[in-house]
Length: 343
Image (cartoon, rainbow, N blue to C red):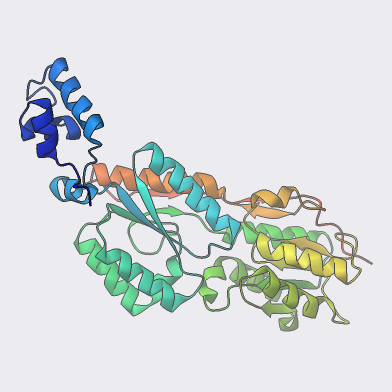
């Protein structure tokens, strides 16, 4: 096996000290250590000739920084959460950071294990796009340990007194329900695809439940609970739409499941929006390309991801800052999938 070149090998070939090689590699001189342009070029030529690569782990130990962050999202199968991750990764890469991405698969126990694993790793910060796992006592203990270590944390909700982007769907859900009621819908169904993590959909289900109950229109038989996949949503939609007293409008907990409702309606011979209005949440990129285009609520997940990293990076650079809190508004987007209730 060929021996991996070391800084000593680079120094010997360049005719300089090992300290000089280290200064060049880490760009830490800041004028304090005089290194001529000729010396800099000799060191860089020697690095290239030997194929020397710095040991990232050793660098991290010396500097205390890994330039790596941890990110936990609820479910990789949902494009909405992938938009979060894309925004985070774009901003992190621009700042010279790498991202360790994990998904809870909407399983609270598994999510707690992921959090505990990340807590043992050398990372510079953590972004939690899935706060439901923190309700578990074990997760709260892990969070307390991380805060004792002063690990920068950004949460995509506003529950645990860390830096956060306070963004949820409550107000926009009330706007959505008022819009459907204004169209004359009195039988509104709800498909919730968060079995195993029901708290993940509270910001949509609770306003739906409370507003319809206040209007005297809440029918528990029109509420379907299912798993998070398109097939789960499809089977739930078939069961709901086959009822003799089926709803005239369906609110899906996310756009991914709305796609399955759209297919189930088509397979049952129902026209959207003439026979059935359909609305959802997240505004994933494909929502505007469906036939019909989907009425939905947007939180601009890409921007939220970018902003989450900005908050984290600011905390990494300036640990003594007061708590940072940014509000990310949600916006109702009315498209072609909703219309007046059928007579």
